[in-house]
Image 1: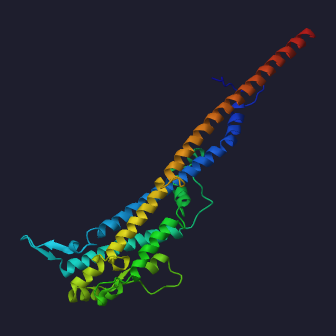
Image 2 (image 1 turned 120 degrees about the vertical axis):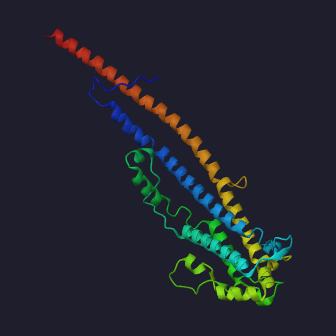
Image 3 (image 1 turned 45 degrees about the vertical axis):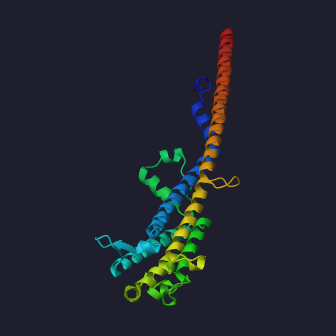
Length: 311
């Protein structure tokens, strides 16, 4: 182990000098750690989206089948849900759908703050917890901007609004025919605003009361092809696809595409190797300065001896 002493003979603050030298040497390591931090934030965001996708998927899991709209009457008999209960199921789906649309649209259009990079450990040490939190909020902005997996999920969900389900009552084969529509397009409004579903409760109630089986079929049809699949089956499939795509982003899906977790592990190995190299380099700096100090000490001793000889 290298003995580290300050510059007693030279009068130089060798510790400070070496720290400054090593600060420059550690820049590549800090960049790797910043890159890893960005990846960790992406994993957090992707995981949050997967939870939302799962919530929407589970909300239609049983309702994508006709039997999911049944209940027991308390006497062992199976009956259809009431008008109010059917409307409640539909409204719950629309609410969760709108939540997902809002989240995806926000992530895709969130602006990237390139002036705010992940903080290094040295930078964090100089800031308060509040300042760190505020900085990281800005650094995370746009972390999934224009993400292809989210764009695909958004496209699949928006496609449900104009879907025509074949093989069901043609009077109720689209969402608009039971009072569920998107708003009139607003120029300059956000994608979420223009894509959210709006329920005309009077029209929905009228449709359910007139023909509850037709309304249920619109959501639960199980035709042989895609056109014959009901709205909830399509929503279920769309969320399955989205979850798989996002999971591949996190964990990887094939030998040619490393997931974020594998990439972070690779960075950890690179950082470990670079830190070993930097520790050795730091020891060499101390050895170099120690040799200089020794030479100066010997030189000063010789000068002192010569001065005494000619005194």
